[in-house]
Structure formats: C-alpha cells, structure tokens
Length: 365
Image (cartoon, rainbow, N blue to C red; front, side, top):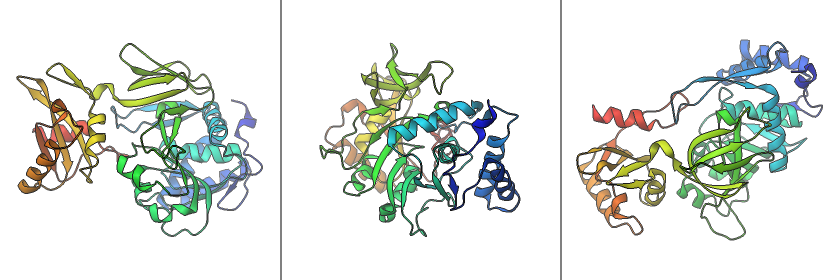
C-alpha cells in the first residue's frame, strides 16, 4: 500500500481539532496511555491504521452466526468501502459525525476510516446504550445498534441521518421511528464485507408503508443467489473473490434483494421448511422481550419448532403466551411453537449479540 494512502483528508477533524496523519500518531498514543477504555480501543486501531509497515488490519468477527475468528482486511479495500458509503448516502467532506459504537468491531473501525478518508468532523462518545443522553449538539451522520436506537428515540432529533447495524431492526422499532425526522437506514453486511454492502430506509418512506422493502447495494456491489437461494455478493473493490453467504434471500434485481433468514437456521419440520426469522417477524407484535425461534429433535417430525423468550419462568405467563400465539392471525399451523422455553438470561457472544446455539444447548442440559 502506498504511503499517501495513510494521509488524512485536509478537512478531517477529531473532537473539533484537525490532525495530520503524523499528529494522529500522538493522539492514538495518548488515547492508549491516558484515555478511557473506549478511547484506548480507538487508539489501538489508529496505531494499526497509521502503521505503514502493514497493509491490512486484524479484525475479529462477531461470532453471531458462526464461531468467532480472526481475519485480515486490506486497508485499501477499507478506503474503497468508505468511498462507497460516502457516495451511496451522500455523506462527504465536512459531514458532522458521531462515533458511538465500539472501535474493536468493524462498524466502529469503519466510522473512523470514513471520517479520515472523506473529511468528516468526527466526535467521540462512550459506546453505551443511550449515547445521545448527554449531547446537545446536532450531527449529520451517526451509526448505532438497534439496542442503542431503541434507547435514543427521544433524542434522535440530534441526528439527521442514521445507519443501524449489528442486528435486525425489529418491526416494533420500525413502527416507533415512523414520523421521526431523522432519516434511518437499516444496513446489511458483516465483518467479511467490511461493514455494510447494502441499506434500506425504514422510516418516512413515500408510500407510508412500514413493510420491509428491498436492500439496495452500494456502488460497485452486485448480488445474485445460488440454487439454495443463498446470497452471492460480488464486490471487486472490497472483496478479493465472490462471496457465497449463508443468508437466504429473494433477488429483485442485481442491485436489490429481500432478506429471508439464515440458511443454517432453517427448520425442517415434517418435511416443511420453516425460516425462524419469518416466524419471529409475526410474533413481534405479541412479545416485547428478547426472543427467538429454534428447533429441537422430534421422533415424529424430525425437528419441532420451539420458542425461547428471555423472561423468568412463570407458568401463568407461559400459558397466556401460548394462547396468544395459538390464536394469532397469519401464523400458520406448522409455524406455531410446540413448546415455550422461558430463560432468565440468553447466552451472548463477546460483542453482546444473542448466541442462539449456546442458549438452546444450555436449556437442553
């Protein structure tokens, strides 16, 4: 990688101050030695990013869909991803942006890369559940997790454009953001695709509908599907080769797709294939706690559908919930859970995401 790739945009500012690439070394060192834990993580990333001896960045995948692993991402491809986001969402130089997600994951890293590459004015705050709680300044752009969005609804007027990643935006949350002036996009991507490769608007759409529309890919990204309807991503500027994912999709065009669920989550119950994510979408109107659909072995069906809800066990609540589900319009007979497991606390990955497999296994012991 050429040395000039490490230069920061002349309009870039961090917490209100412009720094050159050389000065950023001192900032990073200060964060590592004297900063808060979240600043230390930012400092570690910046030191790696500005190190001219290495052309890639070491990143740990989240482990939400498979075992966590270490991968190496080319810095030039991270810059390409930043440029694509800038063009796709029209967030270019002098954008006032807020970093409120951890820099140890790809989403936080890419906020820093976008700021240095595109010339943003980036402010840093601690990545907590309600990051806007003590802020009064307005920002053009920000990235959050669904959990942060849910806890920031009363202060979203401070953000003009928001991207949400690291998990699905629930139907309930989509309903709650209708009418809010902030332009909110749900993103699709993973560590391997250097953050998001597609977005879809979730609020204030012209049609007025809250139904999920298709994800639209970023520039230079095209999509297709294999014989099992698994998403295939072609993005030569950010991927070394075509990527076949485990995401089940419905392709609308080579630039648009609808996400259906995970291939490795599909349940075969009595010969009927069930996508847990589609059943969960229907149940969201009934359940406000965290929950998910899974399966366990059954002699007659092969696998039977079961529901896990993050709540302390209550026989009365379990019975009421079963009745509500059994009478829910639109829920097909084979989609109805055969058993409801109430779990006080779900198992999670290191990054705080729900770990379905470990949660199920813990209840089967």
